[in-house]
Image (cartoon, rainbow, N blue to C red; front, side):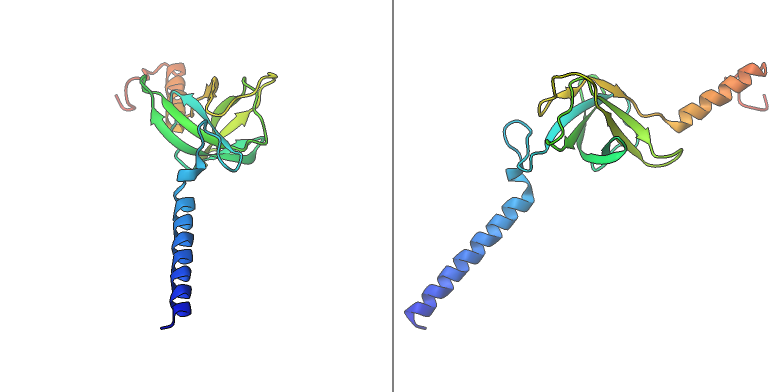
Length: 165
């Protein structure tokens, strides 16, 4: 093997190793975060605290005005056993500080999603801020149980006793 061929193989191997390293780094997500929850694509993260977040998971759609707007990227429990949901939203649309996050259901028995309702304040939320106004998930089973109990009460039946007693 001549010296030129050996040099070309060495340079080619180094370029391939560098390309593989850059690909692994970019797909790992390590470089996406900067110091303040602003991502390299201009999106940023907000937090919303819910008493009950049934039906919400990482990857759940976040909407505004009924249109896709972002995604749920994290969930955890706080020290008071409330669900803290992390939302990733585009930076091009600033949200007022009095905006609200509501957990809604698509149709009667459809999938759940988070709807953001912008407020009217002039100040906007910064990356990493927490939405102050939230509405928990409505659980259909609980709602139906309340309706049945109310109907039993109106008929003079004891709603705590099962039917047949």
